[in-house]
Every structure is written in C-alpha cells, then in structure tokens.
Image (cartoon, rainbow, N blue to C red):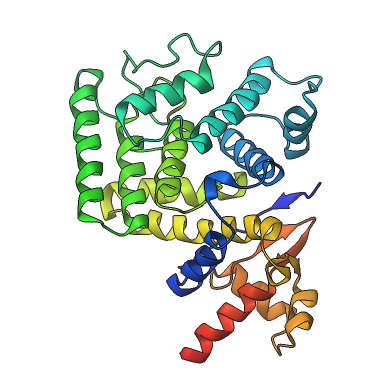
Length: 312
C-alpha cells in the first residue's frame, strides 16, 4: 500500500496539460464505470482525505484496513470509524448516480448518508447560528438559510445553462455552499461531495483534497470572501491534475504509470534533472505526487510539460 504525501502547490496548472490528461482518462471509458479495484483505491484516498481535514484520526493505512477488510481499528473513536465507513458508502451512491445533483435535496441526502447515527440532526439544516473556526467570516443567521440556499441552487442552474468554465463553476458553487454553512457540522464533507458530483456530471474524475492541502484550501476559501474565487479555481485545477495522474496510474497505459523522477526521465530520455522536475511539481507546472517519500510523475506528464515549453 502506498503512503501518500502530497505537495503543497502554489502556481496554476496549465489547461493544456489538464485537458490532455482528462482526454486520456475518458479514452479508458465511463468514469462512473471504472473497475471495482480502481474505484476502491479512489474511495480510500478520497475518504481518508476529506475526513482527515476535519480532524478524523484514522491514518491512510487504517482507512485502508477498515474499507478493504472490514476490520475495526483499536483505540480509535467510534465516530471516526463510522465516518469512514459511511463516507465510503456515500461515495458509492455518488458514483452509481443514485445521488447525482448539485441541489438542496441532494445536499440533505448526502448529509443523512454520511452522518446518520453520528449527528442527531443528520439530514437536517442547522437550527442554530454557527461560527467557522479560524475564519473572520460569520455565516448567515439561521433565519436566512433557506432563501440563501434557494439562491445558491438557482445560481448553479444558471451557470450550467450559460455553460461557464467547469472549474469556475465548481469554485463558485463550492464557495457559495461553504459560505452559507447550512449544517451544524459536516459542511466541508458535504460540500466536497457536491464538488465531485459536479465534476462527474461533466466527465471529470473524483477530485481529492488531502490533509496536506488543508491550509491552501482553507486559505483559498477565506480569500474568496474579499477577492473572488480565482484562487480557489486554481487550487481545484491543480488538484484535479494530480487526481488524474493518480487514477491513470491504475487504468492507463505504460506512459501513464507513476515512476520516480529518475525512472520517468530515463524512460523518455529527457535532459531535465530530477531536481528540476521536483521543482516544477512543487510550483504546480508539472503534475506530480509524493509516494513513500519519493516524488513521482508519469512519462506522459513530462511529455505534456515538454510540449507546453516547446510551444512557449
């Protein structure tokens, strides 16, 4: 089992690279119909990441144990185990298309699926005023929730009708939902599942937001209150590139296999040094991931980066 340690990336992922990786993914068939083993790997990574951001104590290895073998983990809170099992089953509902809309109704259903037996108000809008820890922003008072949620849903439908940029839509929708903060607890996890519904409905794969992404993710949401969602959009594009190479490693060709930087550069005979490639990954120009304490990328990612530099 890989240990996933993901870099914090600061620059914008080029759309050419992002779209080419997506085309390679689509060539492998319907995203909702990927092999069961691949889906399980995606479910494990996504579930671990989204829960850990919110303080769930299970490690990736423990999440793998729980979801692959059905075994429990000693000395962990029952809530953390239940969140793990129920988030994974909720993702399965999303992938199957049984929960498939960015809407108030499906937001409530997502919340009910994840938190039944955990929160006393699972599947219900909050009835109290709340604050967001670490943020200078105060969510709207409870009496304004329904009208704001209706406006949020209407705005999303209008963006869809205008066929706006997929990532701009995602950023606006996600920021709007998190700003309303309609649940007493669990807003982040429901909001990230709504992101994945949005991407799947537009033939993009699951996007993973992991513990090492927490600070730039929360910062992008905070910045959006005063400066708009461009930083959040860039964050989502960069994370999607990483999510694509992770999935392509399981379903793609030899060119899509994740390799150490030395292995990848030797496989295609490029002059770039490993140090140079690692820097480009850290800067967000080259899709990459850190596995077992080693940077990895794919030969295809390097080729796409080289094409881009050649055009420049």
